[in-house]
Image (cartoon, rainbow, N blue to C red; front, top):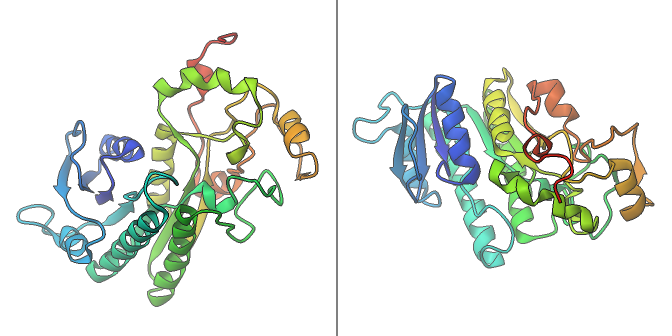
Length: 291
């Protein structure tokens, strides 16, 4: 496919672009900043994602680039977390850029869209305990920050855009905390305080597995809006998942039998519908017994 990726210069975006290229797709990275490196089979186009006209022109084609348009859009461009900009600036940037991406895709006839929602819509930082664990997509979003609110509204926008054109597919991936392999060396230190990472139920997503989820969501033969929690199969902790819940969230219902380090951000739906299957774990990168 010919695929446009917004935010392709970011932490997750760089890995997504490389993964899509490695699987035979032609990729155009739409971002304000060029990537540190550019895989062969990809192009870079500097645009402001909050400017609807620029996004539309980028999808239709600029000069000699993809004059036939694109087959799919991956929208990752955003302020990527709470606290990186003021609340209003984060909200404005993320809502406008998501609207621009969805609306430009509709105008350009692009009906295969995958975008980065967020684990935060599940209720992070869980100062109010989750309704049950492992948490999943079954309950209504519970945004607790301007960033999370922008993602929850993006999910609602996706529903309405698909209602306007029932031929469209817009899949929101609720990514957990994105990690690169070199960051795993600090994971053993999390064991000293189980409360330090309770804010996302001790979850994470290896960027390479995040890229896998994007690719499989693009390949899914479906229409309409849908959302999926995307996390790794395990937690960031060496302690068992059951013991973490018993100590930190003793009054929260645990549904089903937990594996020893099973993620508490359920990926059951992503496994079932997308065929998503995490291939990487921090435990493979950090020898047992590392302090």
